[in-house]
Amino acid sequence: MTSSELPIQTALLEVLNYLPDTVVFVKDMQASYVYGNRTLLSRLGLASLDDLRGRTASDLFPPQLGEGYTKQDFGVLSGEPLTEQLELHLYPSGQVGWCLTTKRALRNETGEVTGLVGLSRDLKLPQTQLDELGEVMTYLQQHYAQPLTIQALADRAQMSLSTFERQVRRIYGVTPTQFLIRTRLEAATRLLRETDWPITQVALECGYFDHSAFSRVFRATVGLSPSAYRTFAQQT
Image (cartoon, rainbow, N blue to C red; front, side):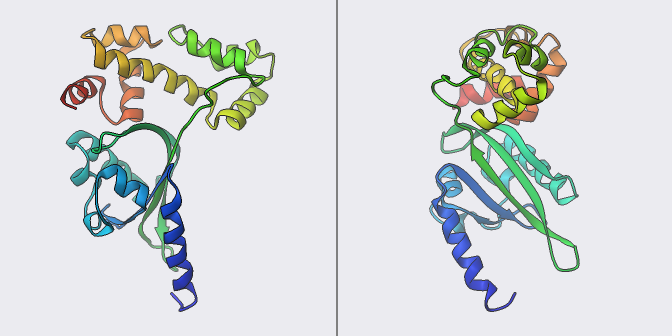
């Protein structure tokens, strides 16, 4: 690194502290934190960067969650980039929120992987839906338990599939599929917290007629199986 690059890096890291709705982090080849912005420290309940450095997600999050995040990190370090993965984050501080997570491997001048950089951007959907997609997106939120398809929603909006997908992404910041998954899993997490219904019944109530498909999507998005989430929610 040249002397002219160092001030740029220092200033960039300082600026990243002023992203209240975005977690930013850098990790080494052991998936240990090297850097985390102020938003991450706050959500982890840590006082300073020194409390973060050298620790992995497995050290900082509840066991099953931390293990899942660390496994994801090693996948990125092995050459599997992650792009805007829809996730429900459950922080030790008690904060819960939907986000889109992106991770990339860091490489040196010779192309060797030296670590990873990642960010998780809070997903805040519009509170009102007065746009041209309002009716169809409201319909989705009210009928998520039905076997909806993105093509059927596009037809309802009187748009081609590509136009519908582009417009949803422009207005809501997610793909139609991600919007549907979020809507269904918000209902699922509520039912898992508030009822003792069997997992199969929860799946059906949320539009998943295949129990294994529900469990697969739930784990990929929340980081826990439905039953593990229920246990986690009862303990917090």
